[in-house]
Amino acid sequence: MKTNLIRKLAAGTLAMSMLAGCSQGTAGAESTAKEDSYTVGVAQLVDHTSLNTIRDAMFDEFEKLGYKDDENFTIDYQNAAGQISNLDTIMNGYASEGVDAIVAIATPTAQTAQNYSSDTPVIFSAVSDPVGAGLVETLEAPGGNITGTSDEVQVDQIADLIKEICPDAKTIGMLYNAGEANSVTNTTNFRKYAESLGYKVEEATGTDLTTLQQAADVLASKVDVMFSPNDNTVASGMTALAQIALDHKVPYFVGADSMVQDGGFATVGIDYEQLGRETAKMVVDVLNGKNAGEIPVKVFKDDLNVYVNEAALKQLGIELPAAVKDNDKLILVQEDAQDGDKAE
Image 1: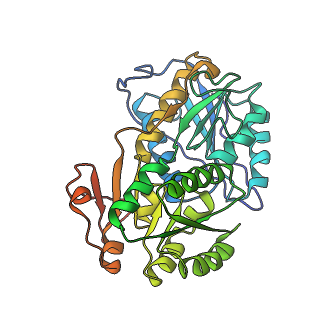
Image 2: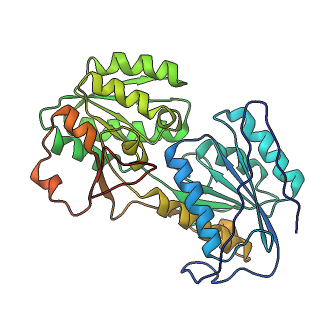
């Protein structure tokens, strides 16, 4: 078995996450792990609820698939602590270590990992626009030595939700980090669709929590509702940004269920735990011999849930319309939910 490595970066927190458990059959991947031993590098850009949910679900799914600590599997998990400059150092380490596969969580991580994909298969997770980010040729036939899962934000459904819940709104403010390719794609698509519905769209950007807070305060003072996509910088500071919106009595629609959990008002979106489990299955398929570039990218865009933060709903004094309240896909994130618990 290859040796576990724990490396420390000056600007990042690097940690080892190990797995233990028993094997059981799961659709979409081998029912039991092979006898061979594997080392997989799992890199994450930053800690926030969405990415942590993906990571934890993926590790749990590995265990269910029979990949066990000290028997046939080693994970070298590393976190870039939000510093994109750390990602290349992490990937260089994986290349030196000779890992059997690289799992890249979030778009910037995947774009860095792609530079090492000629020698090592890359499976990405939570990339909103894999084609636009230059990672794959097409979703159906990625090409190269890379594939993964996409959390493409259904901006049209979110804009429709805004129209349902806030029928009198005329102006939408978009808040995001323009340095994130996934955010640029999503906000561009959101603007186009929202304007087709007759909304005026304002936007503000920031590169870190401080600049985003400043931008949010100005933006919230002149719009009826706000929107942010599944932007890693925004998500990392979601609690503070959501409070700014609440202080201005502005409903803050977001791009991910976990961002609702962290204070955002509402979204239409996927379950990030499911995304993480599907990513793990793709990793297992690659370890068992499938060519990563021949595995279609899995896009989660159907049968989506509507997530509404109950505490924000009460503070804003909004009454959900019947069409939303009676939707069997509605999930109210309870104000007393802890550690990611959600309740209907």
